Amino acid sequence: MESRVQREDFYTQRKIAAERIADANFEKAMENEQFEKLYRDLHLILPYEMAKAEVEGDIKKLELLADEKNRVETELDSILQKMQLTRLDLIPKTICQKCRDTGYTQDGKFCDCYRNG
Image (cartoon, rainbow, N blue to C red):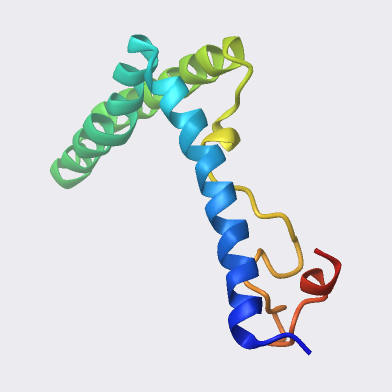
């Protein structure tokens, strides 16, 4: 029978591998200056501006910012597509859909992916 440490190491290694792939994809995307600018707009500037418009009750500005967010997302997708990537390639992917690489199923039982992995 495997030790708890071996089991935890197995899942840790899976997560590390998935994070490395996602990080490499993100770094590749960020090398593109247009992508970097749009990414920062999407994740830093637009959320701030949208929150400000919401607090101010400026519905018209909020609608314009939502349209701008959609435009930026579409443009980011286009840039990524040219690099043969998608937004999903920028986040770590789990191998096992049952346990999401935690080792435990939703009912708290050990997942069988460890034995099959």
